[in-house]
Length: 329
Picture 1 (cartoon, one colour):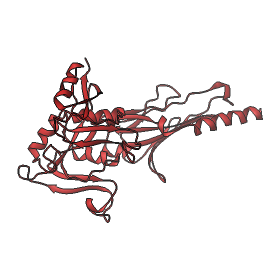
Picture 2 (cartoon, rainbow, N blue to C red):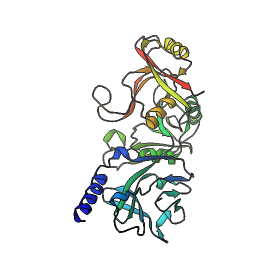
Picture 3 (cartoon, rainbow, N blue to C red):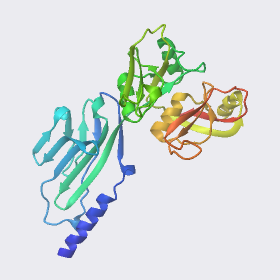
């Protein structure tokens, strides 16, 4: 009996230690949505002892290495909900092993990583679920260079890239997700801001902490900045045509594939939401040349995942491939 118990504990410990961040469940949600965070206890009857007891469930939001926020604790009929989650969370409970959590009316503060612990006797499961913004914010400046867009030009620029001007909440969530950009850009409320995760002298100074730097509200007609655009994805496929072409040739190459030259919004959505990774510079529809790196490595983007921009070269240069976008039929 003792040896069987030790064996059960070994397998339980192995299962827990085998968890990696790569196996974390990722859920995409939009502000105001109801989101479902899956978790359940898969019983292995060959290592269960003493029959079935009361299932204990604990959901926690992981805010940092030493800071966790309690969300919900359940044991049988007894349930405790905490803080901002008190009126907005409940367990799905489709069966006795179901520990799935539902969060109603998703708020900015809800995005992040959650841990589910569910235990019944010798059976235990611990998983992590991450709620991510359903979309991506990206900085944009036109061919003329930085700080050339008034607010109305900024709206048009984002629309041309299959996007809209980002809201403060969307930029804030992107900053929490690691967005760092030193050029100020318009937001949908008429303010001009920029996100800094690594404080440094050219970007507000080292003395200021990480955060959103704000210039406040600006004159929508006279003031000129870049813009932060937001796209919630696309229904189609971004792919690369690997041959050296001029811009007109790139347009034709995509058309030959039943596609169009990809917009910047397509590129950022493919990179952020689908992990698109290619270490080859290619033409985009706005005449820029970019490439997406999801796996940082030497000669591509050694420090961070990013959509790298070469610039707006002469369209007659036969130096780059083409990033194409083909809508799903």
